[in-house]
Amino acid sequence: MASQNTAAVPTLPEERTAAQGAFGFTKPQFLTFLLLLAFLVGAPFAGLYPVFLMKLLCFGLFACAFNLLIGYVGLLSFGHAAYFGMGGYIAGHMAKVVGLSPELAILAGGAVAAGLGAVFGWIAIRRQGIYFAMITLALAQMVYFFCVQAPFTGGEDGIQAIPRGKLFGLIDLSPDLSMYWVVAAVFLIGFLLIHRIVHSPFGQVMKAIRENEPRATSLGYRTDDYKLVAFILSSALAGVAGATKSLVFGIATLTDVHWAMSGEVVLMTLVGGLGTVFGPVVGAAVIVTMQNYLAEMGAWVTVIQGGIFVACVLAFRRGILGEIAARLRVKL
Image 1 (spheres, one colour):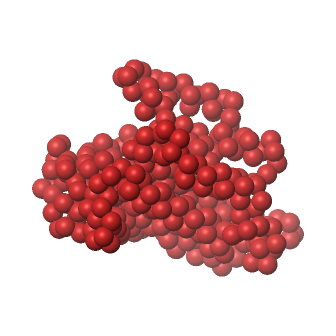
Image 2: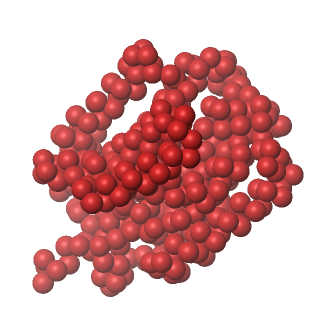
Image 3: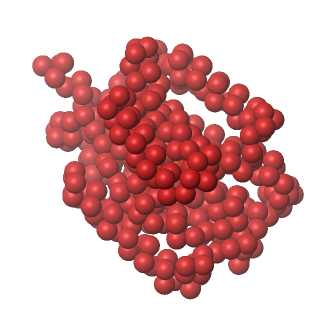
């Protein structure tokens, strides 16, 4: 009888601590994290273009935020572009029109995305499966049409010439390398926050809901409340990623709030490895690298992405990092 309830009972804190190594990572995860840190520090000096790296990190954080919802709660959202794009619009408006410093503009984008996620999540979590996915898509399309019509978004022109400003009013972020370190810091903070959430008692309940929601409910957990909080956290982090991207490129457009962006983040997460800590980052790196280096092929990039997605589904059902972890029998 006890074995039947293991899927719904969160791991005890002392058991979790014993199973993990430094900073809550398992040993393989900690080594992978060190490799990630080495990449973040060394990549700008290895000839990689800082703007390309910043785009990769923004989408990496976006994919990690999406993975928090689908990978650990089991909720497939087709509307995460709404929070990503709205975060970009709000940050751009605050930085250009209101004159907020970049850190406050990013926080404003994340806060508005969190508020939007709270409203949409409250509506969507009342349904499950394909109905949940379709509701999130419909709500995201409402946001898209709002952004087409709203005066502050600039319509089809978007918000252009967004200034990077000065961090804390002191550090000029106009140089790409200066902005890169800020983006890297935002990415690391978001990544570590997601890792902490996943490995907290709250995260254990999220996993229990993913595995068997009725059993979690029978144990006394108010599953709708947990799902709503997870939805808000995921939306807020997606908004932060979008806000950071708008400052990097100096523009916020309808592309980031379009439904295709929601499909793109699904692709990133599945290619990298659903429900893994580092998988979405790997998936984002693969997709962004393809878009960057195959841009000269025009529309064929989409065809190539589709081919890679089909290949991953057939050969790497757990995603790239998920398959590696499964073969090595480690947790990544």
